[in-house]
Image (tube, rainbow, N blue to C red):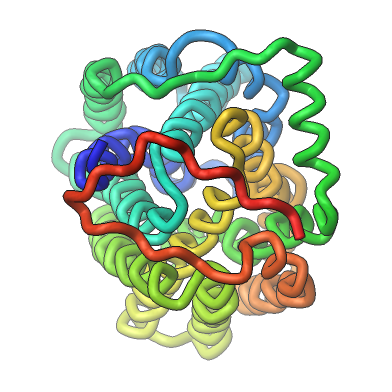
Length: 413
């Protein structure tokens, strides 16, 4: 399969993967805040992201049963059903049944993440990670923009019911597209052999340091996320304004950042991409803190939001290239699910406290705290460098087919 064809299907599937994230991060906080739900309750909504953290528990089933596209199709259909059901509940007084529907939504999203990430690892050859992950992040962000930003334009003229109807129909379309994707070979090993291989991966030299790095690298963004949209609402911004600046314009810059980040990572290598681009994503949290502390006006808030999106795209492209590089293809679903779950681990543990921290410290103090949280990961970079290898192969021309033989996994050093 040529790299161009790989990039096409990566684009399609990562669009499907980005849509539910846009719903959870962008749509639901604005939806509930506009209906008078308290900040602390919105912060507690981060518990709904728990399936994204514990998805390694069922990732071996995705590795061993059915094709990747079968899982994605079923999950998209489930998410369509839940979105169509949300308007049936009173948003001002969320009931347990509503939370269960939303939990089913994130559970389906987490499961399709496992299958899509395994698809990506399975079709890429060494050296293709940089450009592929730039495209991957870009289309993921296009999906977030479509589900979390463009839908905001439906609120004023049509109401929230039409937002969730549009989302439900979009997930149905993505289920059809996923079913049309090419099959990816799945290696079915005996359970005991499968467990031994996974144990070897988990006990590589330096694994504790590398896994800690994965948890900490984007913790500042993860913790800050639940309070960004409430900050905009409390500054008097309308839903359309949030959709235009915070989501749509920001996502466009995030896409640009992802493409440039993928290009930069391909040129300088994964290790250098991680630490250079990571500094930029940390600086964006400091910009938000400055806007809140000095009570700056709309232009400054717009600038901070767009800078955050651009630098987040830069850092995410290099980070995902790193995760893709260190996974073994025949256990792609389990290993990548584990690594991405480690990255998401702070969200259900720390993010639920974001509302209380903001009420205690104020927006400025909270945003500055998330800026400081970005730096402990840098102490672990020496171990990260050993896992990425001494050099980084560059990708082949887009139209050049990949060799039939799969490259050997990068050995631990």
